[in-house]
Image (cartoon, rainbow, N blue to C red; front, side, top):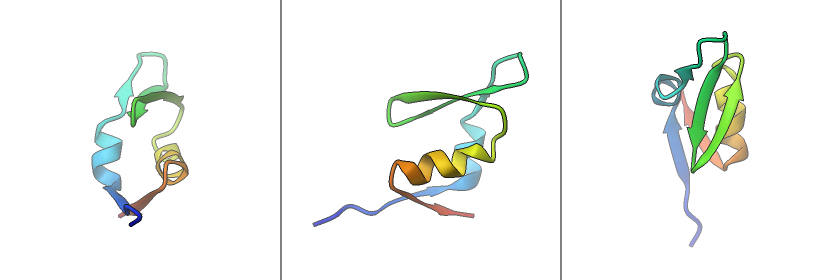
Length: 54
């Protein structure tokens, strides 16, 4: 049976931490990403197999 992973966009964005240099640190499933715009979070989550709920 395949697991379906879902995530609320708002919750994912809230987990992004500003790094003080105009970027954010975002961690998903133990992997940390440095992003410039929180809109990048959708793509990252989709690459991890998540269905994003807006």
